[in-house]
Image (cartoon, rainbow, N blue to C red; front, side, top):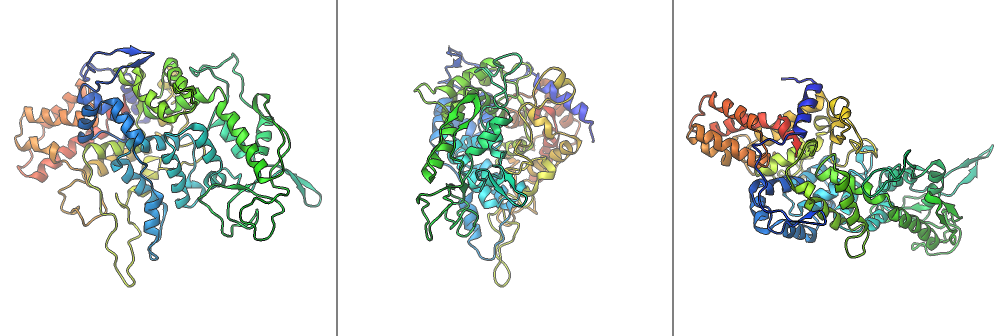
Length: 597
């Protein structure tokens, strides 16, 4: 059944403000210290645990709910901060080692999905995914999928590191330099007849300020503007001068500035000398570089003094600019607010932003930009852990709806590689550890991991959906990819992959297919005796697994009515699974599941 976009948007709006009395109350005594709860004994219920895991991971599972309740919030976070990173590129390298295998971006996306649903470092994976929506690179620009995987792994490894350190790694990344076109950008020079002046590339200079750090206007720690009217953080002259900073960089390993011979497309770029002696591979020779080494006045009238015309001078100039960016007062509230939006709520209060930004500014030990401390502050804040109030929460982006369904229903992954066939043996090109279709869901979901159409991501942090949400002054980033097409396609895809493909289906036999299979048996088992009690048990278990106990009374009654007016399934395992599948179709399409509270 097709629904008009306006109706869906309004239904989701009501979901944003829903604080139904049927929601499982968060119990336990709450003590406050400097705006944060003392959660050493939490969570005190399965619903509290499931809601926390919905925010902190790619979705709760029954086993992880039990583990979190045994460990407590703080111990779980500490464990996640210490967990080693699960990486993507090594897996792609293993596949690529077979000479008959043809690697494509679908295999990278399949691997991302495997990690999202099964990697033990769930918080790290979610943090990398969130950072990748702020510091965006994409294979939509034709960048090799292995390089995208390398950038993804860099953010995964550095997910809890220092912001300034990560900003440096991003700046020297060949992937970012290709994406924002500043690789081989050089100091202004004159060429041609008649002569014309070629200026440095301005793309990265603009986006590192606007998107990756402090944004367009100066803000207080609570994200309010520092003045009225707002004070811009930079202007076109600043962009031009910052562009002069990011000159002289190219791939390491090459014999000269413009060559790709022996180029290292995975390691950090280097500042390249203009007069490079033959056979020089370490770039330590003196002589003019392609970097603009003169004085530069950047934002806030900060002057970067001229540097020596050497590789060392070039690097010191770039690093000095990065130091100034990382120290900018608006970085803390801007990055903190966007991370809160990715994990907890689209409309955090000014006080919530300020509490997190304060930790960003100083983790308590005098360290600025400690991302591990920042995510801890986001997840343990009272605004994240208390019962949600009106306008708190966020629309679940399509990919997170699917991963939540898979993790809740203990997805069984497909086989990693089909058997090699033919002469010589060749691996099926559709190989992917989760499913043949999941690598190519861009048209269905309106998004695909690391495939954003522009550097502005799939949706922007300040997007306001036209209509009721905009009239209320609410931000709703994920609504930017919502339309009649993506609503119906997402619902169909989540249902197909999160319910219709289930273990026990004769055409999805374990060990013979790449398709994922969800396990419906735990949900279906009560239906062996079809009664109001068993129907209620089924709905309550779905509520616990998929909606962390926040299903409204009206939705619960609708599902119970649906079950009570449906003929009892035949007393077979598959018939009961099909009955559960039909209930899940309704749940997955509901605004209450779409909205994360």
